[in-house]
Length: 347
Ligand code: KG4
Ligand code: ZN
Image 1 (cartoon, helix red, strand yellow):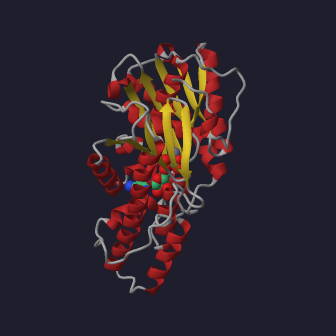
Image 2: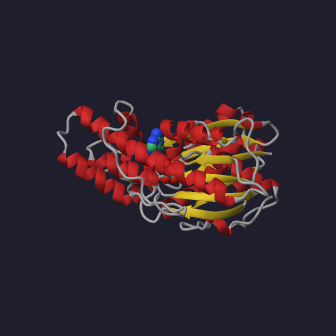
Image 3: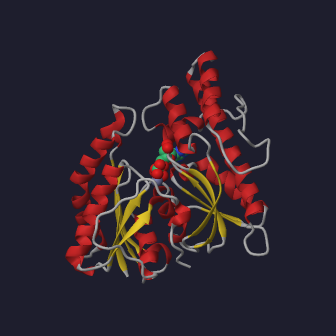
């Protein structure tokens, strides 16, 4: 089954074709992402109306480009998957309207995909994919969640952030330190030049039981350190490194707890799946891999380009749901706020 995936939930237009007849990573026939970063940079954050309008401009040319790269025509498609939420309502409507219209015109089924389920399943697109049950860490700009994955579509929330998401903490901290938007990747690059241990920040909520997170206090600690510092380039890098290490450590501590707590069948879980934009962070990847290896398990990530928003994860998650017989009726409907635990089970 060849499925066109369309992602427009925020500031990236993503399109891909996934072919279930091909094994693992080969199934991804083509994918393209158009980022609106330059458009929103002067405002220091995403402007929803500008995002919607830019999706309108970019989506169809990107569909044409992706199909051409895959060497396919619209007649070769067996289904269309689109992000229906969570996300910005106007941006979601552009993708949903386009996807629904395409599916209608081609007389193929359309399926609505939950953006976070897309992220969660992205590592399963790679070669040697993990199989449920496993624990998933979802770390993006809007979410920080630990989820027990009992099967595809069977998700139990184990813990989540009580305030800022991990990516949001990266972005806000970067902004405070004068780094250009979007700060997360810039802060991570700066941390590469920093010396570990020069600045040590708290590992929030690790001194008590539980799987929830809180990152807003950490941001304030960094702000104070930054204000009181000499603000030299080296100090800036050292603070960035101290912040990144605190986030990475905190996530790793909670992931290990979640693996112990989730229970995958009769035993503790050994497989951790990590997805979402912050999953592209080099230190986080290394730390979680190390933690899982020590427990005799493994940590699975999508390649960095598929950690951040993309159409491939939507095509893949949509293909699994279409294969299970799920389809939407002809109305264009989006769900800007959507609980992943409410999704129907696939397997
Ligand atoms: O999943 P994503 O592309 O969009 C959302 O669904 O939110 O995640 C974007 C987030 C941003 O907050 C960005 O700063 C963060 O992921 N991010 C990173 C890195 N790359 C992206 N954070 C830390 N290190 C990175 N290398
Ligand atoms: Zn995302």
